[in-house]
Length: 414
Image (cartoon, rainbow, N blue to C red):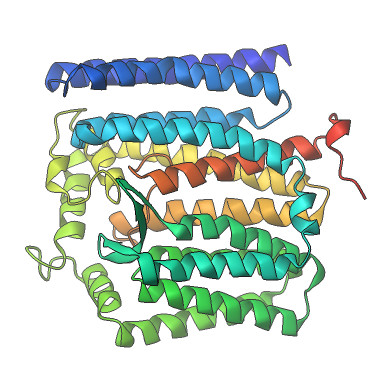
């Protein structure tokens, strides 16, 4: 245990050092936007140490790697946000702080995840909450970035679909634990298609894809049926073709993916600038503060990976991807170690939707798949995504602690 803590402490010191060096470079190349920015940025340094030692104290047998890696990614996001949009950095630090708090809260809640299974009429409760949140954007929603999937409260904007991700995963885990017949799978498929349809109408293509693919993964894990997976893939293809002909925004995304040079000043400007930036970075990058990521639209959120690729090069970009791979691995391990099927399904659902989000945004900005507009977890600017990403890892940590053989007080009650 002592060696475990010592290794984690060394890793946090490395995170600390990277942060200090990066901001020293940025202070040299770019004048700070007022002293408030400097003070709040410096305050982030002890914050990550406090979070680490709280984790060791509260969850000695928990997934300490998750908080270390998420802190590193959040740090990289702060570095790039300060680089491309310094006016946003104080808000981002506030969201990270809230995310840390909710990480611990969700960890504690997940120690007793069987509560979510025992909720009376849980299936109807979770679905009702999900649809109320999704439909609320039709009535009260505001269009931001081309998608009408935001609710605004003063100066704060939130995406209800981010909350629905976790609620729907709990619903699927609860339902699939006891219902695995063909009729049950058809019911889940119909509900998922309805949710996907709502999101497509709202022009939130990325989240729609995440819901659909996560459902497919969870059904496969619960049933081990290749048939259901094959049918799911077929419906995905059919739905894509139908969406292409029904919705103009889908056609634009597909056409930009097929030929990003067809209208560089217009429809394909975003993806073209993203590819220019990645190409300019080369293997080693232009150097922090030495590139031109400001030419990329929405660079602080949707295209922050392109900015990292330009200034840190392919080496930096691959390093970020490897960090995500480690998080994915730890999530899968939590699912495999779970003794209860409900806990395992929640863990695999959370890991799937997190992993798919990473794949979707990185694949989109490098033109591997059509651009969808989701955020890069922990790195992109955005409150809803940041907070829900921390909650996702917090739940995985809670399940891991609950299922640890050495922690008898967290053993499932049957």
